[in-house]
Image (cartoon, rainbow, N blue to C red; front, side):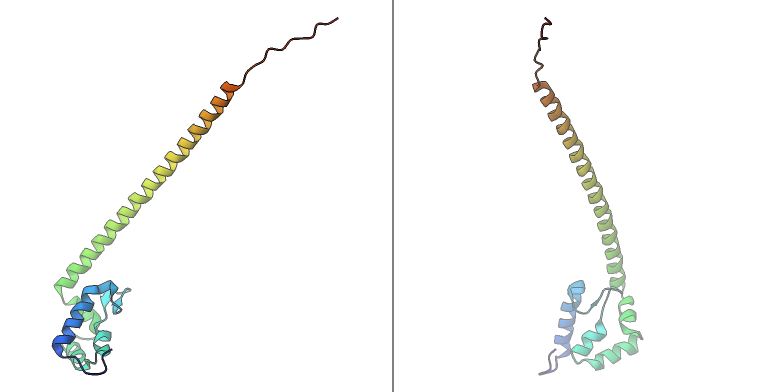
Length: 135
């Protein structure tokens, strides 16, 4: 990204913090694993020395080992799972509500149709007819 001059560690960590804060909105987010790709971030910013140090400290594969070593990550993951479950339940409630509204509308339309048919029947008039007298 920044090829002109290398970032200081302080600037690099500030950018890292900003990208991690975006999480799903970051281009470094790995959706399948629900992880931030710290390896790619460090490579893109020319911080291979920091990447190697982190690999030495946390192990390989770095992304999984690094993030899973933090209690905050576990809390975040648990909170995200709870939110996903709440969203699933909310979607189920929304689906049932829409089904009920649709059933209500259908019943209302049937009632209106029946009422219109009855009103039309009332408008019919029976005209008494006379029989021709037989001669």
